[in-house]
Structures are given as C-alpha cells and as structure tokens.
Image (cartoon, rainbow, N blue to C red; front, side, top):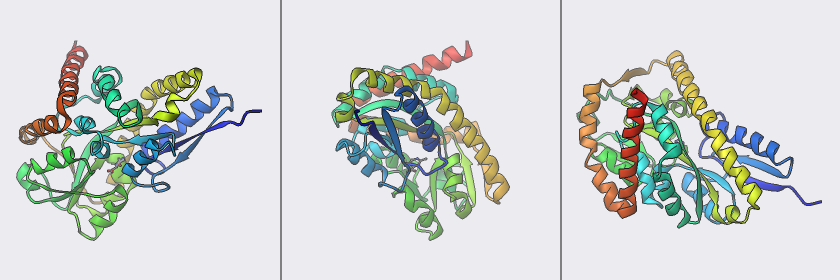
Length: 320
Ligand code: 6CS
C-alpha cells in the first residue's frame, strides 16, 4: 500500500492565532477530502524559524506550505509590498476581502512568486493593524522619533519614516522583550496578535488608525505543487478557496473578542483616530507609493493600479 503523503505547513504565528485557526481547519478539510492519503503537519511559530526562514524552507521544499506575510516577504518579492502600503485598501474590510479573492492583480503576483519558486495560493486579510506605544499618538508629530518595531520589508519601513518615526525591524519573537527592555517604544500589529503576544502588557497606549490591514499570503513550495497529481492540486485549490469565508469570519471574531479581553485585563488607553486625524497620516503616506513603484518596477505599478481600480469598483458596488 502506498504511504500517505505528509504536507508540512508552517505558521508565522503561535497557537491560538488566526493562522493557527486557518491551519487547523485546513488540515481537517484536506485530510477528509484525501481520505487518509494526505497528512497535514502543522508547525506553529517558533518551531522552525522566523518568517523569512520559513520562506527559505519553502523554496527548498523542506516544507510544503507556509504563510508568508508581505511585511517580511517584500524583501524578496518587492511587488508584495503593495499590501503594506497605508490607506490603499477600503475602510470596509468586506470590500478588501472581495478584492483579494478576485482581483487580476493576484495573477500578476502569482507570476512574481513563481519566479522565486513559490506558488501563491491565497491572499488573506487578518485584521486592522493597530499601533501600541509608550505615548499617545494622534498626529504624525506624535510619531516623531518613535522607535517603532515593524516587519522587515523596506517598503513598510518607508511608511513609518514618512511619518517621521524611527522604524526598527526585528523578528516577531523579539518584540515583547524589545518593548519590555525599552529598546523600542512601540510596535504595530493586529489586535489579536497584540493580545496573544502580550504586547498590551508592556505598553501604555493602543491606537486604532485603520491605516492598513495585516495581510498574509498562503504559499506552497513550487516543486511540491508542480509535482502533485492533478486531482490533489485541484483539491488543494478548492480547499484554499473554501477557507476564505471561514478565516474572514474567524479573524473578525478574534479581533473583536481580544480587544475586549485587552480592555478587561489592563489599563492600556485605547483610542481610535478621527477621520481628520487619519487624513493627516494619509497625506503623509502618499509619497511612499512612489517608493513602492521604484522598488517593485513596472509589474509592481500594474499591480498597484489594478488594486486601486478594483477597490474603488468594489466600494462603489457595496454602496449600490
Ligand atoms: O509582526 C509580525 O512579524 C507578525 N505579525 C503577525 C500578526 N503575523 C505574522 C507576522 O510575522
């Protein structure tokens, strides 16, 4: 009898996270459909390496599946930096989800991933990025000189330089101690992550500016994907597609519940920027689009233009 195939699936997040919820449900669906012929083994963050190391393992086909967030991946594939640009996506996350599931920009990104031996299987929003800091932030001035930890993508770093902050890239696993030891003054992540990583415990302010979603991508090793029998490749595609609504609902719930948990559990000051306050940041973020185009080239520009158009059209459709 042929041995069951094992698919190793690595996460950039810990147990109890959005990526973990995704992986557990994905495993269930795949194993059921494959009738025992496939086993999905999940490796939560910390068991294999940093996000960038997971991408390297994928390129070597040492693991078959992983999440690769543009906040890290744009160092390798600049085009994915489009997902880290501020004030690009809609304020309505349902609109974003729709665009990420259907835009032609995704096909252009698949090409860029393919050139790095990676197969892009899905682009998934995990919730609004919120700032935590040792000070209240209401205007770009309040960010001046703020040592804010960001993921490693150069385009993301430029986004915070544009506000006058002093962005410091470091691996996810070092953020808590970095804050505790005051090597950094703040950081930026979705609410569920701020809760489960305990960042709220070592920060005084949590600020919601809705400047960007945390977006991740689900990626397969190209060699693995290309060598799958047709029916399994199709099954993988179908399951990835079927996961979209599951994880969209899940992330919304996680982010809501955990904001409440943070409120209950700490004295952190939670605030939301007004539209006028957001406008000041929006304006300062615009030149970063040119930096993105410079780095991501012609294809990057086409991706950005396509997304802008699709977001606008989906927003229009949502109000009609
Ligand atoms: O900030 C980070 O590096 C990480 N944050 C989340 C929510 N997921 C993965 C990413 O590596």
